[in-house]
Length: 125
Image (cartoon, rainbow, N blue to C red; front, side, top):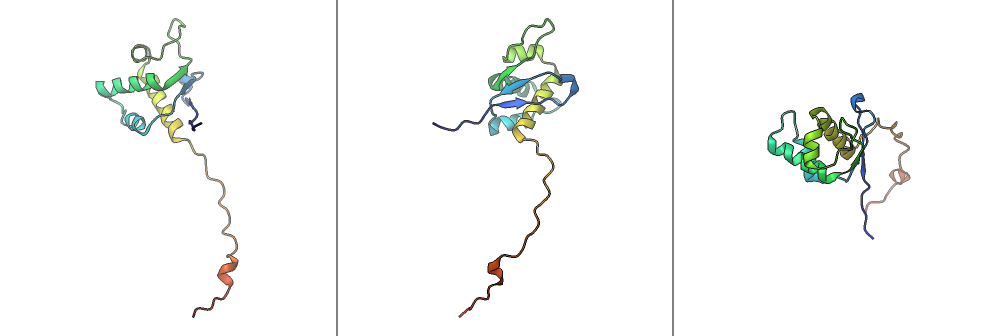
């Protein structure tokens, strides 16, 4: 039996998206490069690639349209229902989940005592 990395739970810090939950498969290095290149004004090709990527990696979300119906996870549904602010929040959530968010480092350990070997005289012949 082989090893598989667990799924990602995306976190949304923006209060506007409070309550949104999404889970996804892990992202490859190529996926991360694509998402990293997704800037403020993506061209149509990059936008389409990001929608395709999200549709292939998102496993679930609790996103609903204005009528309360669940929004499918397909490129077409993402394009028709996800506004730019939400799309950027999802991409940021993925970046955070992939890159991890490290907290402050713990207090460093003291340098300690010198090792015993450093104090033993050696005969060099």
